[in-house]
Image 1: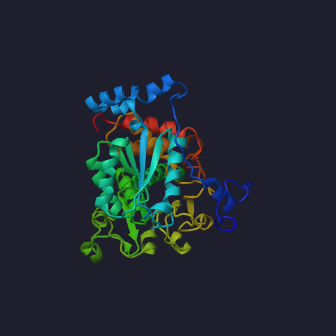
Image 2 (image 1 turned 90 degrees about the vertical axis):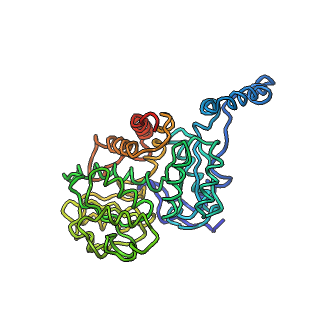
Image 3 (image 1 turned 120 degrees about the horizontal axis):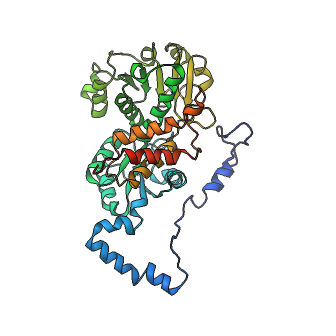
Length: 402
């Protein structure tokens, strides 16, 4: 264990003591998860019912009617949290073992905020074929698959192929969980500044998993002026590297976004923009934020260091959000993914559809309406209303057979 130190970031309020490295390591020692038993095993009769010979009756019934596995095993309530450790938090490609504490944390969030059991599965491969094959082979043990921290552009193919191969909900949370919460926050932010989603000029810094998914959900919500930026500048149809490159997703979004054909970098994109959404490790100079339109909205979501410091952004923007818990307006995936999966499983959904994601975003946004302000555009991740509200909205949006 490293020597004692104090973390640079994390307090949950002005009176909280700094979190020490010793405290963090003590909380993770032995892992954060365990398996519980939901049936009594105190007598011989208990053993005969839960295990042999009684369990054979259930196994024979499932062999004759596989659908019984959904009601007589935990599979229908169990989520596989799958990662290859290639895009972990702000740490990048740290490998499967180093990603396991994060996946355990994800499982803890599933249980706490969605009432769902889940098992972290980290894979010692970066090969798309091997990841897909492995998950397909173990799929009978689960009711849903949450993909986590898989780098772009491989994550798009992994998700697409698993959705096609499996008859169960599959979602890459880094893409869609982020997008849902961003849309919820933006829905309320535009109310605060007196604008409409349809008329926004939105700029997204980062054209990876989260950036692409945010662009997708904004387009689906009626925002038709979206500009995506990667390390080489804005995505537009005139970029030769996109025409010749192997990233088909970026090529597709170069065609679907940037209707004004904005070329250049962040300075050009932010000129007169209403919204900046940062999901990259880039830094945005203050003078570029100052180029934005009146009543600007800035979501600087890179962790632990936002693309622009919140106090700097507030000099020019009406609403500012980050991914951190120590500033107002935390954009946190935990607002979305537990309820999305719980709603999908409760309703027996085979897929997580765009309609279900939009319903989740509306539900999250609705919970903040009663106290809406520039510093309160989404509820707290600890708000006990969030999980049930998202679950109910998602379940209601499920179309039978989907």
